Length: 223
Image 1 (cartoon, helix red, strand yellow):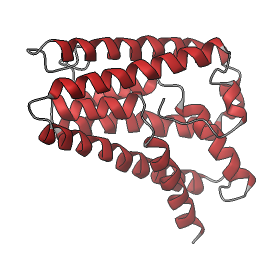
Image 2 (cartoon, one colour):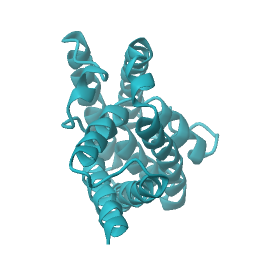
Image 3 (cartoon, one colour):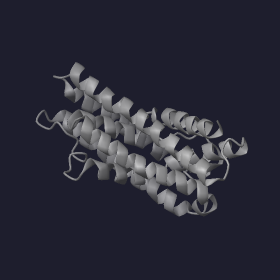
Image 4 (cartoon, one colour):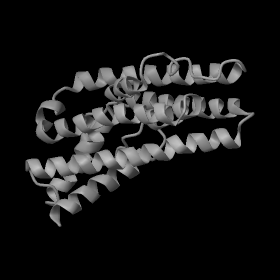
């Protein structure tokens, strides 16, 4: 009963944390539109692999990670650059009727590895899981046991994957309903990326970096 509660808790938190619009789920949506469902699932699995690794690190090395403030700050700036580039390339794809794919997401390497790279450069998920794991430790739902960690991470993985499937299959529904107006989808996706980049930039200017957010569990993991 205890392990099932840990699994369901991890699944529920992860699923809800995946739903807010962000870099990874919008990229999965765009890949499903341009390449199809299977490549988008590969992308989601690559991103998921890095997330569960980050969660494991956050569980066993909290103090070590907290001290790496400069690393997180660098990753934040790098993430802003990537999101900005994704926004620009989406607008280019929308403006050019012959260009149906995002320039950055259209590179030939496997979508699984693209998911690995983009997820590894997304530091927002680390403070998200720091916060929630701390809450679960405090409430004694999660205990410092290997079995608890493994079940918790399994639930997180399932929840994240289900959340990404919402965007992947949602992307295909958009294509079916707007078959002759895909530029509208590209403009919408580009706008989401642009707004995300602006919000992250504003947050960084105000010095609300990822490390400072580790003090609470309110940060989303989908920025």
